[in-house]
Length: 476
Ligand SMILES: [Zn+2]
Image 1 (tube, protein in one colour):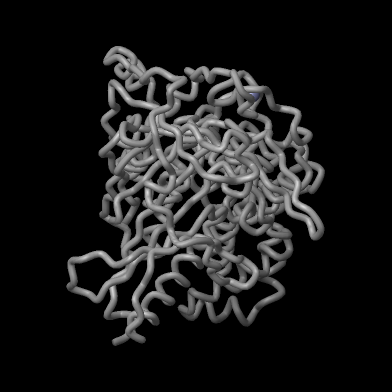
Image 2: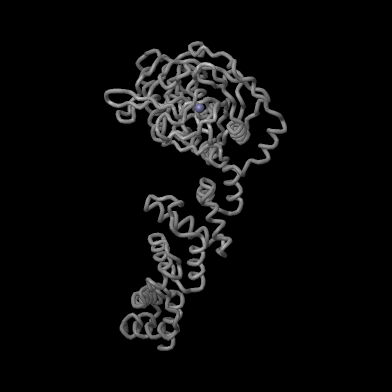
């Protein structure tokens, strides 16, 4: 059998850091970049005799995410202790939710794929600290201990690396649109743990899973899943039994390193957290949060496509609130939808892609881009000159009018000069004119090119063409 005879089954667990200012069960600031071990207190260090207290803001953010993902929020959920040994977990257990999570049974639609992935559950928990390994020793930083996380667990509905990628990108977009998490992967705000199994196509039973811990980039997720699936197919082909295993992804060697045979739930010795009462949420609280949800990316995309934006443009505008704000800024400053779309979604996106910059780094404000669009509309700029001007504005951060003058980009609108130039070109090219009069009218393109060169591209080609035709018909 070949790999195409197998089906890959993927489930994704995502740990998203909630955008609160303080930790989950104490008042310490969430500031993982602070000097190590400065944002800690007896509660998050798990010293004896302390009591955790729930952060209301974290609960609200968790409910926001749950509702946006179509989950039903449980009016009563419970905290549990999950025990495991790790030097960055001073309590020896993590406070999480186990049998009674905050929310369950949601779904996420993958854009452009006509597919929904079911979400099994969303629960809240606290993060562990961080180990910093150097060649001779390992250091520990507890600043991250107790930072609030939402763990979002999908059903094993994902069937390819592309779907996994789309799921993660859409989930990240939703969490950002909600203000629930900054969801920056490279900063560890959005960590993914895929579980992967393969089975011969047509078979209904699920195989044993490979789980990969804490992946921090889309690339690592993609490569880790591909590797795990490939390994499993090889083992199946060789008649080996697959044992459920947890792996670490080695980015350098692009290999999976077995970490441990997967613990079962019993290994974690879960039990109810005795220091915290059940988490009670009222219907009224849920309704209030529901009413405050912003327009979600999927709805925004549909609205824009309904308003005649191309799928690609809608994707860009839905992906980052900044793009939509900028777009609205252009419309406010007098640009039409078509003009805004051309200059923002085509030209500006091209400039940024070339420079590997984001819109946040773009030095041109909407008002100045609208000024450029206005000059173009009034014929003060030709299209190539407008492009040149936009690039210069992006370089220098100066205004459209100022730079147009500085770079001498204003179009020649002086009829006299246009006529003089056109006459000169006709005089210099008698052969072409003769051909024109014999009916080879496409020669006008050549003459136009000569005129534009003389005018350094700064004239409206339509006006020049009309001038040429007038003079040529006079000269007949
Ligand atoms: Zn603390």
